Length: 240
Image (cartoon, rainbow, N blue to C red):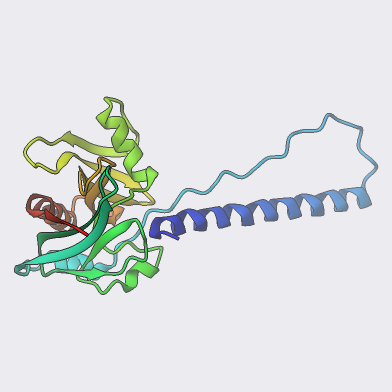
């Protein structure tokens, strides 16, 4: 299960619990009424009401992330990674990639297959397991969740999307077609839609942070970091 799929599963579980509780309350009301009052006059049945699926709550940000954002950034370093891809002729390739970011970021295991690399801002990744919190992170995403990428696709097609807070086409960065700020899963994604590997499916490099970080020094640090990652990103494919 992907990292973001866990959030959707959590919301569904809450909805199922509300459905069961609603049904039990109706049964108790009907039993009490039958014991204390005459049988009611027959009426046309009304459709059963269904509780609305709860929305994902906005994620909180722990205070120490705000504190680190106000400190002097650490020195830049080169981060590297590897993934595998294939071309249209069936050839397999090992693709080594690299980019620059400050040492304020540390690589962590996201536990999500769709994420090639995740860098947590001043963290060891433990907050990732707490779904009520949003550790500020940089994400290199190979298979974006539809809640994140579909609104950006609409903007690329000239339409509008309610949860897109900013959208801009990009022409000065070879791997990027646009950048956007999207609200999804109760958090903010500042991202570039990029081309990586040997095909044209949509991927992104972006930052994920809490809604409460909007307009703060923490958001600016995340935005600056993603801008640097995208501008310094480089790939070297090697045929296997």
